[in-house]
Length: 447
Image (cartoon, rainbow, N blue to C red):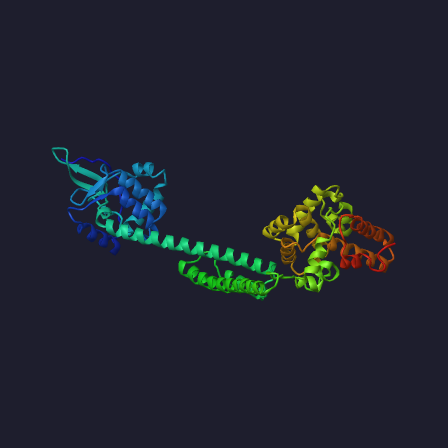
């Protein structure tokens, strides 16, 4: 008795060595073998590229497996399914018939299924008197059982390769991020090194990374980057160790890294005297003798007029809150890091730190590293050897000198400087040091 369950013409197809190999493998499947078809299918999906299968081909394989009623596939069972093209198209999400035939051929070439052609090229099953299938013609999925272990090993190899690829990409990302941060830190902190050469070397290595690269290529680039990372790290660590040694040997227990030794802040203010740089006790007393009251905002703005450029809309600065907002704009513009700014605010107080930033901004063209300079001022503030008063007085004195040279605004500049001097002189509870008095009483400062 013969029952034609589903019929579809195959046409004439050539036999290939791949098809013969698949048939040999299928015949060699152990009779006691048992696999979970969906577990094997997952392995096939993971190893898809290694097997040469396409996404569409796997969609068809998924549909073919669904036509077998059992989840467990046994080596001694009949593993032929005979769906029509129409049924396959419906379960494969409606792909065109030509696409279906093309990707069925891919499954055969990959050795994932075997065609079992009937004499007339149609798919059907012949049943016996008891209703059992005696002979079926269609697609043999026995390679799923026969090659299950092979698919599993391939999938594990692919997963391992993907993991290794992901790890090397993470290495590259972390290394690139760290190098950029260390270069920025080295430049900001004034670490002696040829940072231009380091940046060029970094760009040269990064420029080798192609848009699509193999893991081996990325591994080689990662090794180069890690070598550069080690060099930069060693330069920074050596600098830190040198500072620690200098700090231990110094009488005041610290080493001041100045961004520009001949900065006018150092040469003209009492904080920049040579004796103070050496930790002279007299000069510490000199700083302690400075006025305790706050600098008037008007005097600070007269000394640091460039801060007005940072106000949105070109308006003025009417209070300390607006002045602090302008300092927050000036800080990143000069490359001062958030950590340096936070340390300065902690050591000096928010208002004093903002004045220091304003003064640095006023003379940024004379300072190599604004961040390094602010850190050195912060170090002084921590041991009570810093005040913003001399900085502001030096700026006002420069303003007066410039006004005299150009012949414009000299009277106004003198008034500003005299007003600041009066604030110092009228502090009845303080004794003004000789050094500070000499600074305030320089010839040509008054009227």
